[in-house]
Length: 514
Ligand code: GAP
Image (cartoon, rainbow, N blue to C red; front, side):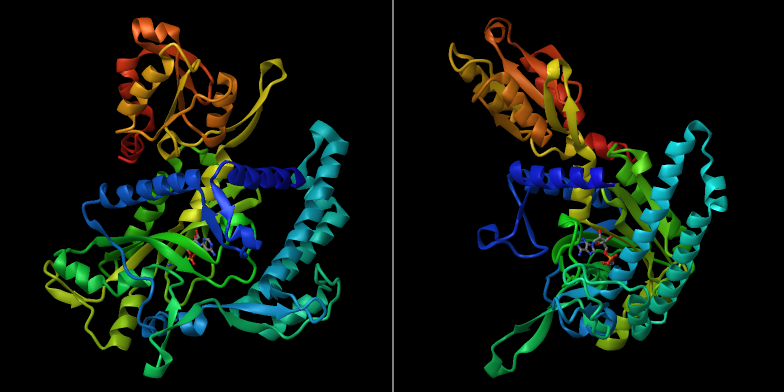
């Protein structure tokens, strides 16, 4: 685990050093849980968004996109339940004056017990070697059995307190477990209170009577309130979907793990409107289709798993997460939710407008049911970055850091390099760049040794390096170096476009989803 933490630290440093992600407002010492994307990061992020957008709107005839405003009428958040229930349970330590999420303190305590169990198991595995039987050990070892029982009891008590929204009980668990503040080391805790995660601001001048508005905590509500507009103007017939990519804001209390949990982040959400009674069929469809979208990137099928929700929100009748194996464990990247007709019904109630669909096949009107898929762009970015990062030892004692980014997502697709800065090689290299740049993001690089230039491109995940040498002047061929294998082949300049296109185009990735 410690080793994985080290790798994660290196990935965060690499992201900064190579222009992927910078801490926000860094020259003012940063702003907690807010990040900026650099020159390479923005390209990778845009490619992720393009992959999602085109998979939704090009591959599905019945899905269209919108771009709704971040500010919306405040009653929307009353109707959606966010004003009353979008809360985290908070606790303060009176000595350090630091604020924590009570549920996270308890989850960390459970994780500590898990660590202890795993340590006992690893110790025994080393002792017994090949003949070690983990199941048997778990059942028969007194210390492990005791820890497992303690963990189960704690987990059950915690789940019940969360389900019952019992803040006193959450505090009592913290006291009983003797959880200390990591900063002050004391158990001097306040009561647990609910804290709303929405950011508020004011619209209009105070003299006119300013209105309190919220920075949207999800993009989905912008889709719900435009349901009628899109359905009518697009003459959409159920089933159909509305997709949107945009910023969302949450005043997260425990903001950790780099861009995993941010206060300003981006979501890609699609609400799919279906007939009541058909929602489970569509839930299954989207659950399977979304995992296929992830796996098509080739980051490793074993890195994904579903996590079906046992406890459902009161308006949902099914929900699952797609989790990805980050360096800090399996974590949610996307949620797929069957939200019934809750949101549209609530907006009908609060706005007083009829939000119904007349189904010509059934000859009746109803409030559509909704299947939602909601994925965080930044979490997706993090999963791609972490699984692509590799420190490789090479023959001859050399080493390199390489990002094995899916070629279609790479910020730069190819780099063209003259072997030397003379003899007409830079001119020919520029000629190649001037042709390729119309279709691919192409870099020109003539500084430093060719080896150093290759390393720079490996570090940002460029799939191809094209080297122009003296032979190129004679026969119009170049060497094409492949990032992952480092193999080089001699190819005609005229064939470059076709070869590169086959590997790096978004089109070839989308075709895998057929
Ligand atoms: N409309 C449903 C919705 O917003 P959610 O599970 O709260 O559901 C969906 O969020 C996705 O948004 C998550 O799976 C995650 O990828 C991303 N997300 C949520 N909060 C985030 C945060 N604070 N920072 C980064 N991404 C976040």
